[in-house]
Image (cartoon, rainbow, N blue to C red):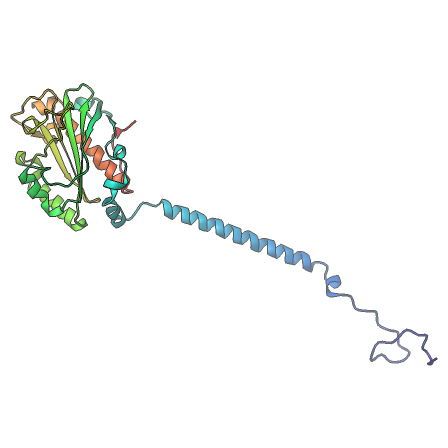
Length: 285
């Protein structure tokens, strides 16, 4: 045997007679906290990613709940007439809380709905001419009776073809030329046969209103009359018939309030359907 073969082998480079160096420990054994630190870092990173995802979700939800821009609402308004149920635009029953003469409550019940149509023959010639610049995509109409069955009210909504500038121009024209208050520009009733409204014609018109909306492409109108079929020789626009102290027949009977408040309600329904916030004093059960 080789001399010293019974001795443990020496490390390379060790000089004879020097004790051998102890073996090196693995890195993981020399640093017992490394794995724990790495795990902690991963945990912090994971929490950060989860928190970021949640924050992104909240931001997305907030943006989804935000009201539409004016242009988006106007564009949506073109489709409301066929994308919204008739019972939403013209509810079967409408409660007007404190909107009648002297702050009285009013209730109206729908008795007839016209098939959606164009605007040909839907207006007297002068009113048709006044609204012609807006164009007519569709016309919706419904007739209501009040709780006492003494008043009839037709409400109509014409979806226009024009753009926001066109609606604004028409609104300005109606306002500056007082067109909404001219008796030769009164809307026509919808009076189908076989209903309590079948005797509601041109001569029975007592009060009315015409609204050219500008935030949605819709023209809303309402016209009211007595349910017993009596002719009215001096009709009065709703704006005048609802003023404090008005003593005309349309004012004292509440026909001005009927026209004004149902037009308010239908205008609010179209705005809401287009995504716009709208506040009214009327409520529907």
